[in-house]
Image 1 (cartoon, rainbow, N blue to C red):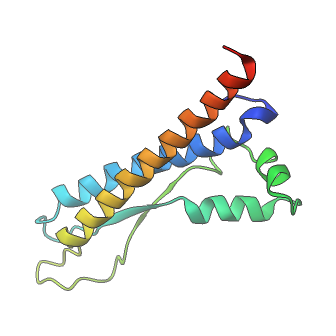
Image 2 (cartoon, one colour):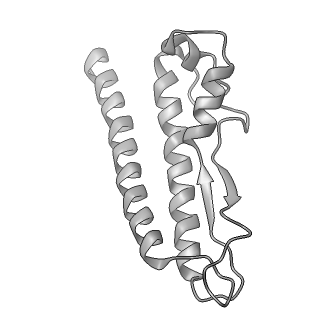
Length: 132
């Protein structure tokens, strides 16, 4: 992680991109286990984690709240969880819906592309400002 006030939003985008990459991996794993009896789908929380961390700050100003986040700890990482652990609509007790997983994977791929584009844009602005 870069540590400078100028990089605060880039650090948040970086953490979000990491969580998005993790979620793509987890969704791919769900698809690979779609026919495994008793397998329960997994997913990753990040948006809720980020909102929770921002709400813990004493600042009402978003810039100050983002500046106060701890990027080096585990507090701002995506959290893996088992979705609807007790639920299954199939006889084999598996709760993976292939169609839903494919839609979620496509959505997450778009999110990841948007996040990496945003990081690239931030660095481009720094490059313009510094004249490099």
